[in-house]
Length: 80
Image (cartoon, rainbow, N blue to C red; front, side, top):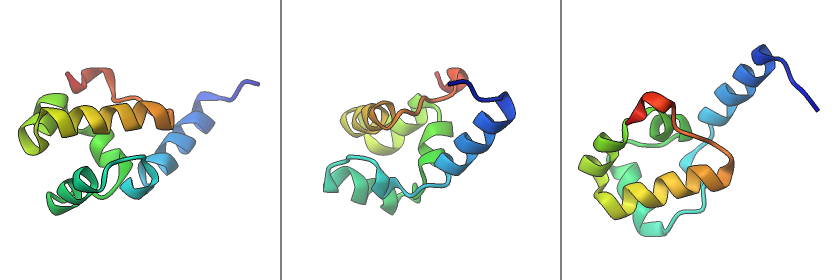
């Protein structure tokens, strides 16, 4: 199955709006992320890795990135 770039962009936009609760995260990581204002998948996906590490610590940032991967999402390649 193949989808157009426009359809893919719309689907990605919808997925970015999904709440963090959709990801398989420990309650500790989810609570910490929400406390810092991360409520949607797109916020995590668009935040550079160094910023996530600074905000959440290395272990929680890695957990979030693994959860994104498991969910089928990738951070933009510029997220360094």
